[in-house]
Length: 236
Image (tube, rainbow, N blue to C red; front, side):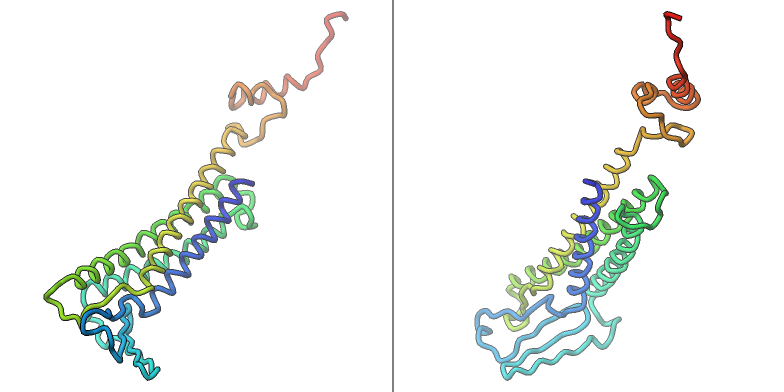
């Protein structure tokens, strides 16, 4: 029951991280215009994301425009796009695999250790997806902070960290945590199931000394058989 609860916790954490990564990838609030110096009072706010750049005017008008040319984009933006998309695909794949291997599902019923290993593989994919989405977050954060404190860049061209970066960072950490919990639950379930069956694949007889002494194979079968044979009384 403990491993099943860990599986559910890890699965829902991974699912939550995937949804957060999806929101972070789609929305344009990665960088927002800074309000410092002469740019404190401005009639226009700009927001930048992976796919578009948006402008919010003081009149209430909100307009977004997608980037026209993919090849003209900076290399770091193209790499961030690729990493985020791969992270989402891996998270979807991890969700499907984890559903197959979790104890609360009927998929792969009777497969034994294979079912727990499948759940552990789903946790591994969640881990990889979390680390992949963590790279663009750190990369973009470093670039924004570096440009913000660069005296050679005009104030009007400086940006601050958008809330999508915070959501993306939290989602990446949640995905890593969920994947780790799934892997741990798989290991606990596998360790808990070891030693319950001998080499022939049949369970040990209840109360047999073979289970206590660790005897395997034909010797275990003979030990269990002799324990169930009727014993002659020494007084007859």
